[in-house]
Length: 353
Image (cartoon, rainbow, N blue to C red):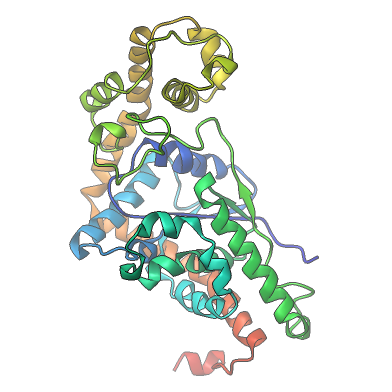
């Protein structure tokens, strides 16, 4: 087995307003992972965004807003690499090579395409269908060893591992002949965890919090002010019973479980610890405590996002710098892949012409 340096890659789509679920399930963890002894790359995946049609002007604003959220939440663009996907061409080029490695049957099993395309699959874009192959290229362009993913993306990461394994097997002799050992791509491991890795809708505890939900009251946006946060938490769906003292008491109570999980994640404690403090309490007393905690956590992020969005030149400079640093990692990977596959490519001198 080849040894790979630890590298963490993850991406966020610039579609719609980022919400509490994006923050707790992804961005907050990105900040924490800066403390790992590993290179971290955080990508605004704008190529994925256009699998569904996007208004060009709105898309530019959303790319900058997601970047602002990264920075406002505490991601340091000097310690980590922050960039948007379309500025690094190796993502798309490697995706084509992986299209020739991946099998049709693998993609036909992807449940997220079926969910997003619905009954009108014949009118869905090829990009929406092929999304998981591009995701594999996003990850393996950097030969990433770890990816923080939610439960809904685990299947796509499994596909990434399948593509890596098939590439390593199909081109094994060429990989060794070019001095890369027994395997060129790692089998990327998922990083799943945290007390609120999956944040649910405030209106339906059985559904994931989503940007596309028609109800604004289903989610807390990172752009919401204190009054909006308070109103949404107060109107969050609950049940008539008091909070239990033990975790088993949350079974069969999805809305209660969701609010307890959100409180735990915001405070950085376990659900059990939340119930030690609030077991036996009514939601009429728990919700105000949750409002205070949410406002305390999100208000500084909200304010910093507004400041950053008002300075698009600064955001664009961060993205350009990050893209340059990302390409320094991805370009040698793609060059090696071209050699392994058998392409004839220009040498350094010719590429500079």
